[in-house]
Image (cartoon, rainbow, N blue to C red; front, side, top):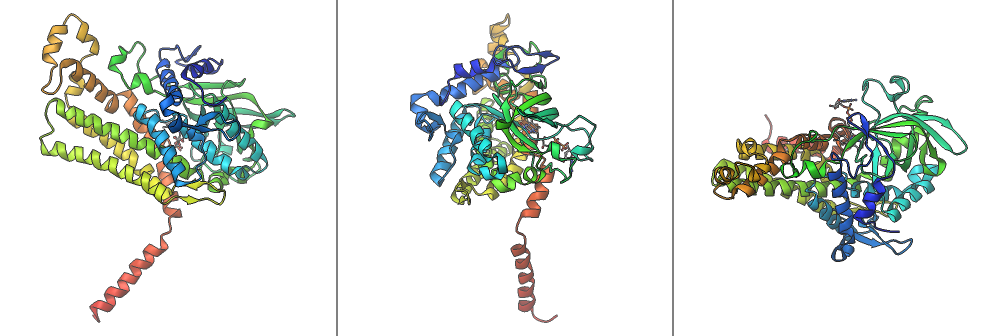
Length: 487
Ligand SMILES: Cc1cc2nc3c(=O)[nH]c(=O)nc-3n(C[C@H](O)[C@H](O)[C@H](O)COP(=O)(O)OP(=O)(O)OC[C@H]3O[C@@H](n4cnc5c(N)ncnc54)[C@H](O)[C@@H]3O)c2cc1C
């Protein structure tokens, strides 16, 4: 089949999924006013793949059928492949300004990396390979749910309230029956498939009681018994004209709790089964983090460049770009974007072939971005708040441009560098980017989407090769002692 069009994506979303929002079942995510903006964005991304002038940039020939398939499914075999994948990711995330973090390339890259090392899945290696090929050939959109519900973080999953966390409750001839809940599937409203996998910072104890929780599988999101509970949309119901919420109305990707109500996972969809060793060792063995981090660092770069451009446009409006502290903050945004760009390129330059034949970008520079970018993004929001100041809350709804006060609005909202229409649009965009509920969710996303930064930082410190650095300091002490002579 190969790449799908936006229209096919919209059609695919009408699959009878059980998505609940604001206390009721959503009947059609493509028409629901809280969700249709995200669906439209998703459709646009898929239409981009079909544009003749972008076909080579966004797709490649399937090794199975020769049909064009999405380039984010490409297992990189060379640095050139990494550069191609970067260009593809950039194209999608420049379109969404880095604000639609779960565009399908995020999980496509993960699936491609897992499929390159199927032996990490032990007896389910063939299922993993098939899961990847199904997604690639059908151009399917995936979401994943890695962690158990946040109930009591002082106890491991086996000691939580009975029935809370999703686990295998029964094995049958046809498959495994799963009951309980998992958090947190972003994109639940728009994904075709749900991937349940381990989370690196939530290892399981190697005990008999933990085995039912050591599960992994990939099923269609509309599978019988799968219920998604979404948080409310970022816009209040009836929240005004789309002109006033350019980001909230387009890029809210949804975040869902997933409930498994005795869901039968057929054996061919099982990727892991009651195997704590496999569950805990998966990421180390398959080395998927390098490729995934490469994808999200490119997205971070797109986001940083958008925030920088927004700040440039904003300061020209009321001509504040001549003030030195404003220039200092603009320089900060320029430097952030440069650091991200350099890290992405360095990761490609220092990429190495894994034992299973994948060109893995160097993790060091990408890991640096993973820890630095949440702060960079929060800071860019703060900088735009400082620059926009009262203007961010003074601009009215865009509807005033055609209301009874239209003439007054044209006069009183003009700025030295923009007419009233442009100024209102620009400041509404800035508000959405740095102050709105949408922005708050973006800030939270950057902090947590790649796992808990606290435990992540601990692992980074523990795994980093510190010895040469410590030895160097002691050698330096010796040298200084020698050079400075006896006391
Ligand atoms: C917007 C958003 C989108 C997300 N999308 C997805 C998704 O699509 N799929 C997915 O699987 N996950 C997703 N996540 C979830 C993400 O994986 C988790 O948020 C992350 O792993 C942290 O887990 P938690 O939220 O349960 O926080 P917790 O683990 O409950 O931590 C809460 C706080 O307690 C501290 N804490 C808890 N336990 C410990 C400990 N043992 N040691 C030290 N400190 C501790 C943490 O540092 C943190 O400050 C998303 C998260 C967000 C915010």
